[in-house]
Length: 136
Image 1 (cartoon, rainbow, N blue to C red):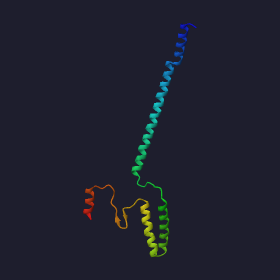
Image 2: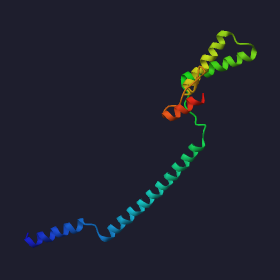
Image 3: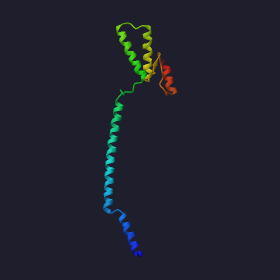
Image 4: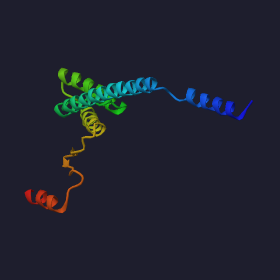
């Protein structure tokens, strides 16, 4: 094989491995269509997120999972409530009621007023603490 024919063969291989203008245009069209589709999906997801955020802001009744402690306290409180409808609770039952109410509040994260003592919110600065103390 001569040197010229080798160069022609290499030129043929290179030209065949390079995409044609039509192939490049098709690839460009496919990529732009994919980009448009992705953009539409992104816009839909962003609208869905905004909608869900509005629902969360407007909803004050977000259901939290119930802990075992809270479930036990609720069941026992219902039993004591039913007993109290039939008659007066004993001292022991009253103590249990008090204990179950406190346990339920603690399990729900409500520690604002346990044993008659109001808890202060976390993160108050000195000025806010002085203001609260001067009210009492």
